[in-house]
Length: 466
Image (cartoon, rainbow, N blue to C red; front, top):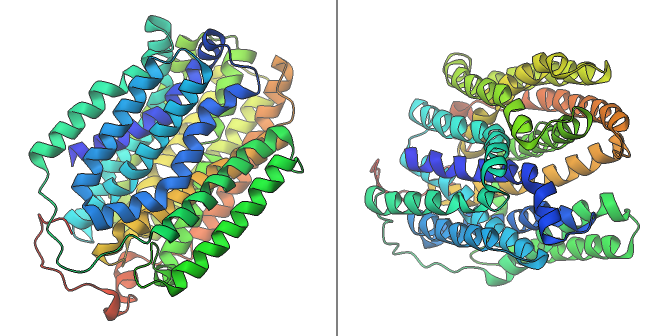
């Protein structure tokens, strides 16, 4: 459990740790103002594009095996990034990190859902997993500030190398081996190629549209090709004997709603640190070290919210816990918008930052309980990947919309006004998520709703990985 949670921590930290290093990294390697964004987008595009492939690979090739190999790829890509001397190398390293993360993330969720039975054991396991992940998202900014100040931008990449190596070795020594499969398995190469191409093109169009314009030829072409690729994917999946994503999974109400919730979560809560980082450095004049320290309070608040989440879920159920988390998050983001708009300093922002972070921590874990509720064990990987894909795509859409709402962020005064508008926009999205969460079903009823024909009659061994 610790290794799975720690792998989640590594991915969460890596998602935000690079933000703090961007100014120094861009200057050292000679990035232009426009091209620097691809240090972030190279990761996002690859992560979002390969998630479904990663989830299906964990189901077919063995979750322990895929987990360890993906950690090795992530570590090697981080080493390449730390040694990079030119822009192309660092973007390539970030893309390889994204591919590794796309195989790690659904593997961790699938392992948890396979090793821990639905109900209280899985709630407790996901609470631990969520604690590490939600804390890591805020801790990345803190750690990034410290590392950049002490050791330079390279350290935000190199720190991953020993962490991934130790996690992979720990998995080799402690995790139960993948059970041999006797059933016929195929990889659906055509479906994998179509969905990977479609997701990659879609995310690329979303992240470039905000800067080049939505009618730019490259953006419009990428979006059109993405639609064609997804149409081809749907046609292939409906006719294939071993589809990459069984369409029957989409009949699950919880999976559909939880996937939408992950998109909103990423496009609101996790888009705001982008504006907060600009606010701290450009409007408040903070150094990278102080910018990192400014995220310490939200980091601790998220950890507290995650701990509360497990208790609230056990007492009131998954659905009400998610509703409460998003509702509390909406109050926090609204307060944050007011604090920024009032023109105050960090003290004016702190109440909103803390309350929003507690709400995030409360909502995060139960969303993933909803993703896996009632899904057959042999399809947990691809179900996790579906929700993870919407998580990434939602992040790209949300950030693009909030950047468009914020407008030009060139001067300190404009940054403050724009960040306030972005926080208000995020508040509206979080309120929508709270309302949408009312449509979820708690796991007991969700499990009962799964047709018996979809459930694999597998040996009931608590330490086996299917």
